[in-house]
Image 1 (cartoon, rainbow, N blue to C red):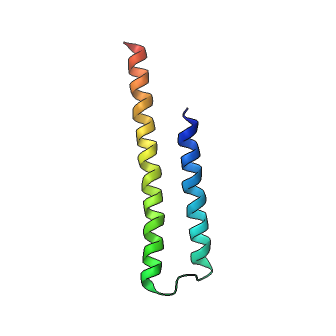
Image 2: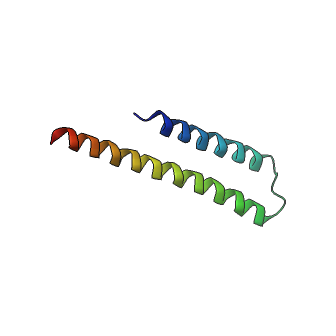
Length: 68
């Protein structure tokens, strides 16, 4: 329902793909860099989940307001 949210999700997905490709070709020079990149992917995944939850809550609030 919110195109801005879908655009953000798309950006998160695309960035995760870029990082995963970099990792797959061995761009990480050590375990620390690998751990950092995994953390970025985890952060992007969590951000997407939080956005999903927020959107659900907003839509639920709108639906509840319409029913009042």
